[in-house]
Image (cartoon, rainbow, N blue to C red; front, side, top):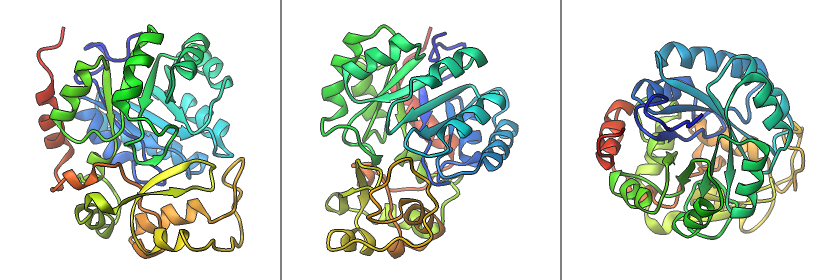
Length: 311
């Protein structure tokens, strides 16, 4: 199945599934209804919560496509993935580690599995195991990063290495970015940061204001307890991380492996709720380019200017 044929979705655009509870049903449902692929960020959710979010998104999406994104590093990765399959999502995206088992789960359910990759080697492995597509995510992306190379650097090599669709991600904000990356061979694109600044994204207003106020110099790298670097917007929390580590109390054991430098789940939840200086505000490298909050439908109309008539 080509998940980016016109019969699958109107536009080859995936709305990124951002955790913790940044990409929820209102955002995913609106993205799907607008002709793209709407993704719920499952990491950090309980199984029943994810089921409810999928069902809510379905009602908003109409005939549009709904999926989830879940980190392999999450301790309940398998439970979340299997619940999503039982809910008959249209695809599952996973990253922050690599799972072999999820491809057999997807085959049994008839659900496309998409792996986030940063090298041709991992892309080839994913294709061999049965991936429907891969997402070539460059260093410009927000959140956890798997490479220090840009998406423009890794995309051509990954595209050359596999026959399945290759979706470009990392730092894309508008139709100009999409047009440039499609000219490099991308079969589709994934955008996360642009959709945070949508009316439907259910984060606190102060989270969105922090995005709108960010300059190029405000975008920094932090060391995540997941064991990967992460890209975020500078705030008091990120500055404190550079100087010290907090002591974790009442650890929820949300990760398979954790450095315990700080609680990533709590940090992301705090910022989403509006406690900006007590949390981590993940974002893409080019957040400073986005200057307005728009409805998802309008964002899609703007992004779609990158495409000619699709066959």
